[in-house]
Amino acid sequence: MSTVTDNHFEIHFRANFGCGLGIGHLSRCCWIAGALRRYGYNSILWVDNVTEDLASMFPGSEFRAVYTDGYFIDEKTDAIKFSKLICNYPVKLIFVDDYRLTEKWEGFFRNKNISV
Image 1 (cartoon, rainbow, N blue to C red):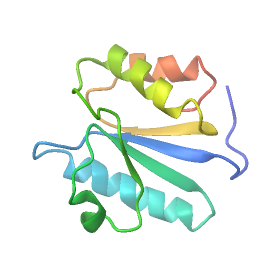
Image 2 (cartoon, helix red, strand yellow):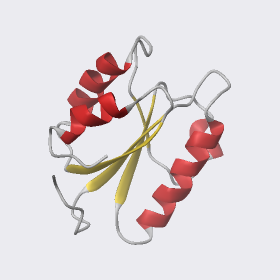
Image 3 (cartoon, rainbow, N blue to C red):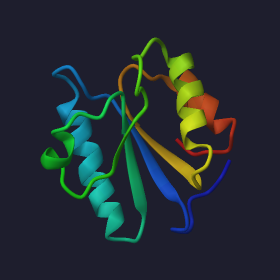
Image 4 (cartoon, rainbow, N blue to C red):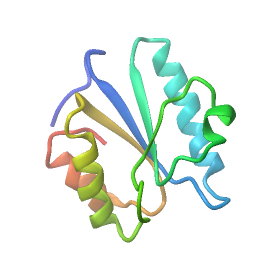
């Protein structure tokens, strides 16, 4: 398992937000990302779809869409898609705040030596 000992990597957040739900998930993730930024960590927050009002709701946060076309089907499909999206980033840690994603999703990334 990888250890998180330096800030030469990015912390990626996977949160559930959209269609009137997940504001608590996203608020929590943005607060943690902001605290980590003060220690020199870059964070990217991944949600199903990025809405126009996200930037104004959470200034200073960087958002990316997991589903630019389509939508969440199941956690296995989500893990595969998310893995492809983050493969070019120096990821050692994923912070998950999404009830749809279980230890099965987390295990997919632990098998790639990414802490979840």
